[in-house]
Structures are given as structure tokens and as C-alpha cells.
Amino acid sequence: SWTTASIVDEQVAAIRAQVGGKRAICGLSGGVDSAVAAALVQRAIGDQLTCVYVDHGLMRKGETEQVEKDFVAATGVQLKVVDAADRFIDALAGVSDPEQKRKIIGREFIRVFETAQAELVAEAGAAGEDVAFLVQGTLYPDVVESGGGTGAANIKSHHNVGGLPEDLEFELVEPLRKLFKDEVRMVGQELGLPEEIVQRQPFPGPGLGIRIVGEVTRQRLDLLREADAIAREELTAAGLDRDIWQCPVVLLADVRSVGVQGDARTYGHPVVLRPVSSEDAMTADWSRLPYDVLARISTRITNEVAEINRVTLDVTSKPPGTIEWE
Ligand code: XMP
Image (tube, rainbow, N blue to C red; front, top):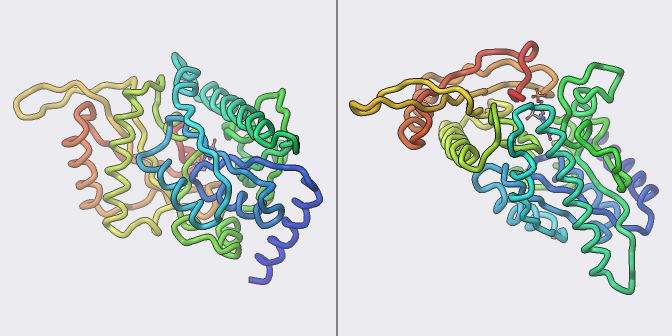
């Protein structure tokens, strides 16, 4: 549309003015926001941009492969993949507090970007070009909820706003900072990104790390990854992807409940299904999913993921709940 085209033109001009002849890196998360931010910056500065995909070990099943394949195919962008799972999971050891998790994840992202920056500068060799800019897909609601908007309280520190370390060496490029998700999707469409990317449901940068209530461990991540993959598979099979905003699956890792399987007692963990509908994530309602779909998800998760013996449904709107549990 006319307005979307003008947003693109305006941002492309602003990015060129900001970055000039220098180089930038952009963290890709697999989500819509970073993909659109990257595409926008690529439109502005071409191959002065390198995208960095950080596999922090908190990803969902198949996510890494999807970024490597889909996004590169769609844009031809230069992509550097960093396997940083050990570093993130080690840094999160022993931490249960949600804000602390968010800050650790935000900090580790920046440290990985700094390393990537140093490598790129070294690779440039004699050219010695400076990689001085970091592109982020920060949206307006991220800023507001992190307390950076209109003086609002800090509800949670989105990893790319309130989670940034203070000694940040990059200058930030955030072309989506004034936009809401639906506008970001329109910009993505305008830039020619494929439907699979533009219509993808939101997934938070801190990933499964903020969907484990309790300490994040590899074993818990594996459980949650399986449960999440089952829920997504069934929602897709039922044709519900476009009806819901997203459906986090949350592992209550510090809670156990008694169950029975065959004739044996089990003592496992519950997961929570958190399907929501929303326009912009600022407010949300719980989605009235068909009972038979909920039943299939529940049966499959408890059958296929041994340590999970109970599936519950979150029926809280936002407010008073937020979408994610942490
Ligand atoms: P909440 O939980 O605040 O979530 O109601 C609103 C939307 O934002 C996503 N979310 C995040 N996205 N980094 C992100 O990129 C974050 O730190 C973060 N925290 C929440 C959440 O999935 C929902 O779509």
C-alpha cells in the first residue's frame, strides 16, 4: 500500500544516512521482526550487511534449519551461524528469576555479536572496514513493555531493549521501533519476503529460556522442545495457525504432580498451553481452541514425552496475565 511503501522509503533513507559507508550486523532470530529489519537494512545498504544467527540452544525444534534455509533463500543475505548453546546454557545455570534470565540472555547475545564483529573485521583484512552497527528488530511494544516508552513501568525486559548490557559498543539501528507487528508484516510483504516468514507466529528472542519456570537445563529444554513441537504440529494440522497469535507451551519445571500410566505411578511435570489471540500483543485474549484439538495435543504430549504427565490450559487474558509466563 501507499503508506507501507512510504515507510519503506523513509526507513531506507534513514538507514543510509545513519550507516553511511560502514558495515552492520543484524541478529536474526527466526522471527518476523528480525527478518523484516534485516530485509529493510539489506535494501538500504546491500552487502554492507551481514546477518548473524545465534543458536543459543533455547530454540524450538527445526528453527535453526529454517533460518538457514528460508531466509537466505528469500534474500540472498550473507549469513554467519554461531553455535553458542553451551555459552548461553552455562550462563543460565542456577538462575530461576525471569528478569535475571532475560538480562543474561540479552548480555550473551551482545557478547556473541561482538565476537562475530571482530571476526568480520579480521576477515575484511586490509580493507579494515569497521563493523560499527547492530541492527535489531525492536518493535514499539517491546520498547513500551521494557519501560522505555512513555515512562511506563518495566513489565519485562525484552531481550533487545531492557536486556542490553550497559557497555554496548555498537550503535543500534532499529528501523521498526515505531511499528506494531501488523505494520511490520506489511513492510515485510512490501519488501517481497515470502508468506512463511511474514506470517510466522511470534517467538521471543530469549526462546524457550523464558518458557521454563525454574532453572533452565539441557534436559528440561529437550522436554519442552518435544512438547512444543507436538502442540505446533497439531495446531498446524487443524488449520489454526492463522487464527491464533501464538501458543507458547510452558514447562512448570519446579512443579511435580502424581499421575498413573499403565498401572504405574508417575511423578512428572505439568506443561501449560497458552494459546492467545491478539492484534498487537499489547492486549490478548485466550483462544477458545476446539476441545478435540486440545485433547489431541494433551494425549500426544503425555504419551510421547515421558516426564510430562499433565497438560493444562491457561485461560487468562492480557491483562492481567502477560502472554509469556516470564
Ligand atoms: P508478553 O509476554 O510481554 O509478550 O505479553 C508480548 C509479545 O512479545 C513476545 N516477547 C518477546 N519477544 N524478546 C522478543 O523478541 C523478548 O524478550 C520477548 N518477551 C516477550 C511474546 O512472545 C509476545 O508475542
